[in-house]
Amino acid sequence: MGNEGSGMSPLNGLDPSMNRVSALMKGKSFFVTGGTGFLGKVLVEKMLRDCGELDTIYLLVRPKKGKEPSARVNELFDSPLFEKLRTTRPEARKQLVAIAGDVVEKDLGISPADRALLIERVNIIYHCAATVRFDEPLRKAIMLNTRGTKLVVDLAEECKNLDLLVYVSTAYCHLKEALLQEKIYDPPADPHKIIKCCEYMEEKIVEQMTKRILMDAPNTYAYTKALAEGLVSEKMDKIPSIILRPSVIIPIWKEPIAGWTDNINGPTGILIAAGKGVLRTMWCKSNTYADFVPVDIVANAILLSTWNYVGRKDHEKRVYNLTSSAEFKVTWQEIIDIGTSLVEKVPLNGMVWYPGGSMKDSKMMHNICVFLYHTIPAYFLDAIIVLAGHKPILKRVQDRISKGFEVFEYYANNQWDFVSTNILSLRHVVSETEKDRFCIHGDDLDLHTYFEACIRSARIYVLKEMPDTLPGAIKHARRMYWLDKIVQALFWYFVMYMIYSYSTTVSSVVDSAWDSTKGFVTPSIMGSEQSTLN
Image (cartoon, rainbow, N blue to C red; front, side, top):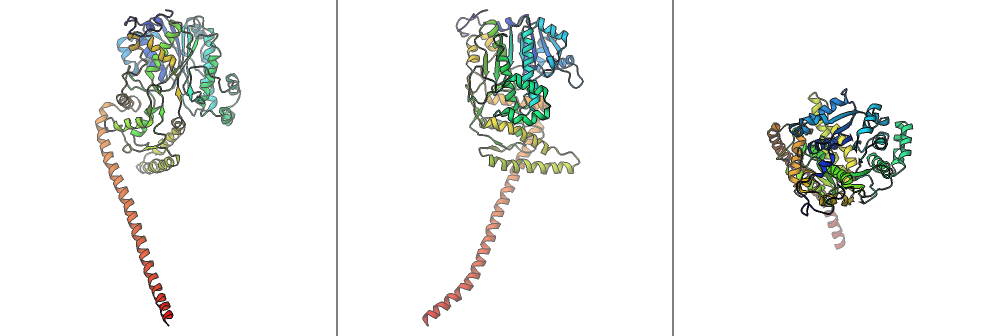
């Protein structure tokens, strides 16, 4: 396809019906790691639905909870996310092939026969596998995020018909850069040496050395992803490869299910915790903004950047920052305000207290509010739960929230900006059909509609709260609203009563003291006056 259409917008000469992205994928075989993860699921579903003439998608899947990899792929295909695909293309299941393995194992844990199959057949590799836990023990994070990437790169070098290796990194791995460019940065250390150290050292020893190894990196996730980028970039002269850096990946915006997610990361977790009434304070600068990208936009960007490199032969663009804040600056206060506006419309089941609270600029004030509004209520309600004959849960929930927010606070109270010229440039070389089917713009994004879809989907797919429970949740939310108002009124009545009682007591003491002093002072004065007259 060469550079056909280069520099043209969809309105400047391109056939609106052209779909060169899907055409490129025809007959090709893919190897996907992390295909059962959040991004991987959406990417695989998108490929099968809109690039249906591809040959095979080989998914690296490890056995889990006694289930074989093929059984896990069956579960994936039978999940709600794939319902639209099952309806339109039920035969797509045959295009999914499970490859038993594990990113943390030697040679990815792939059998010699399967490895030979991949080497012969794979054209494009999507490496999405990673642990996204920020507090993952360093050795585990290194083995998965860094060594796992090295093993994928090693496999890519052996593939006989490789068109492209796509490594999915993160926009938050070079945090020294206040403005992240679309370029290669030096890794924070030699990734090969770090891998060797972790291979030979016990986990306890690595943990003891973690702070010294990380240096100024805030967590193991950012550190290990930066190392992994170094492993990919050092082979770019030998392997056709690109690096994609998405920011915080959030639920689906458009398709196949608006608002769908399978986790509580990012703003969804904040909205759920606040919606349940267990999150009432955040240490966060309310006017700062984070960078979020819906997962379906990331999947589309992966496919478009693949087409750009392989189809358009644009080999100059090797790094893409998949970010949004250059166009959409959504502050934390806006997210909270949107969530508050949706409380009565889409409340969550089992609301512990009516949602409320605020963000605090002061860490000290935040800590005071944590004690008053998180810790004390958790112990109080847990005591009631224990008296009712059940196991306490709220203190444990609050501990998990606190641990999660220790990581969140670093990102919420710092600011980064991103250059995203490379991915934005692809908007000007796609046809109308490609623009619609592989959307990477936010022209028609409505934040209220989007977050409402996120909460509705979270109720169903994360919290397992079915739509028929919504009327009951609305009634419960109203009861909690009035209970909250009554408790607030009683609290302020108590405060005013205490102030009044205190002021009355002080006044009585002052009056009493004055009376005593008056009786003592008056005769003395009279006596002195008499002596003066005499």
